[in-house]
Length: 46
Image (cartoon, rainbow, N blue to C red; front, side, top):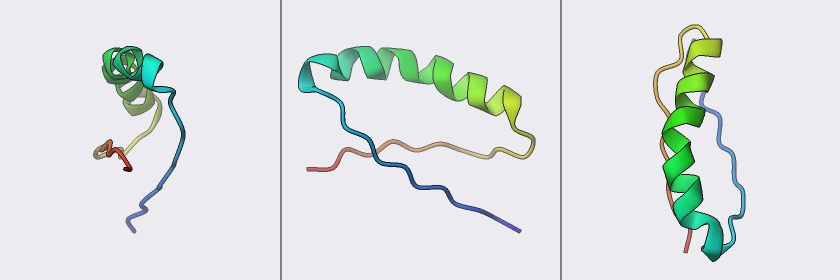
């Protein structure tokens, strides 16, 4: 069985660079904590 989780959140424009810099570490921590994790994708919503 495959599951897709979609999460939306808002980042103030001034914090975008910090979020993008921190994201690899956040995804790595998520991956270590979850068996079977395949991928995480980030998309900006206009």
